[in-house]
Length: 300
Image (cartoon, rainbow, N blue to C red; front, side):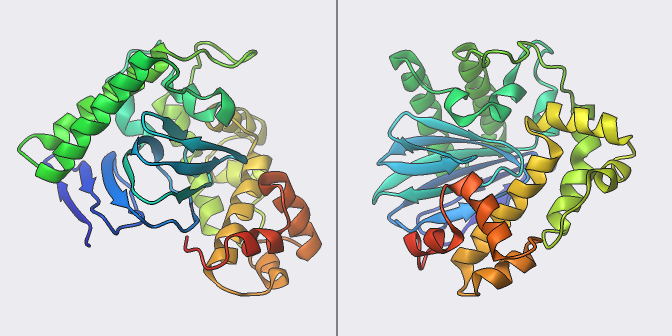
């Protein structure tokens, strides 16, 4: 089956994924992905957009930021920018995914909405559909977007935007920020824009360590200011982000081919196999070879 997409006058993309598709590259203000799949292989991915997923039917094992849970009908999950995530679906999974850029979604919100912090909290402290009313509302949004993606009637792009805004508000209302975090983060579109050059630099140089001073220069910020803004927007330090990203690249390569672990370690900027193994255990809880054995034959 094939993926189709349309573009409106504002340049926004809203995409439809039909059964058989695995993942779509999304680098646009908004995309909506509806899928039904019987593919049960383990899959691994990163993308520059933020993501909210809704499980409509079946059961999906989700791995985000080193933590895991099983999504069932009515459950949701959130992924931040360039956050490594993996999944394994049971047969018959049906889901709806919203992908969006933080800059594109900011303007409709008043400043007190704290939705950005929902994406950078630890996985077990991110919003969940923990009441019958929330689950009902979220499933209704998913059902509406599944129909819109299939029918593609006039104005379905705008319906997608409205659905995403409703979903973010529902999740924000039912969520309490983690202890010790700011209840009113000051992140803004300009904060996000300031660190985008650093994110692009890291993604373009996955074979080596990009220093904080180099990343700060790309963002035209002092190293100390860069570290502050980066942690505020991304929820983790720049150093941890860089290691996490290169470990994610190594994980993807482990699934993509049979190259020796030592080779993959050098390809992803680690000094040797043991260096990669130490960092891999931090984020995946196992050695690279064990990760490959568990998911042999999977496709990223």
